[in-house]
Length: 189
Image 1 (cartoon, rainbow, N blue to C red):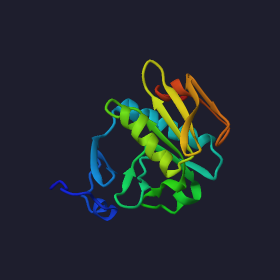
Image 2: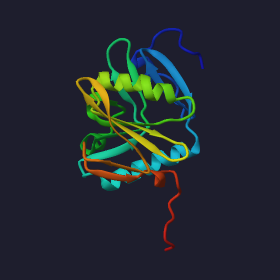
Image 3: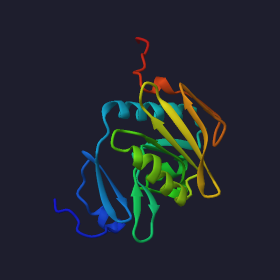
């Protein structure tokens, strides 16, 4: 593959060869390529999507690895949050990507190599794009979640939780965070 030698448009980004072995994003037209996340990260994302979809009202849905256009103008910024919460009716339409105004919650699970991007850069970009809620999940001795709410164009920390996450906005929700990192045991059938 020949690497771009200029800032990309969204149309040029769409023409890149399909490759599921890495994550591709645009930051102000610059192509960013990162390795796929490790297995524990993937487990936490999958468990969080599953947990949210069991608990959210039917009109909302959590989906993983969806492209989100953060800045549609020139130069474009396109991110792939670990998961987003958007309207079920929109997901039913099966768009190739979402626009920031269609995302209610963006969630990033911090991996080695993504900390500064998730905690600083994406926080700034998602706030500027108007995504109302941003959750940052950290993996370590325990799983933690920092809940941010957009207030006057800036994210403010609403809560920082370990072990258990509880919120009332944008929905009433309670999640055992540590259970996200453990394989659930199913009863034998």
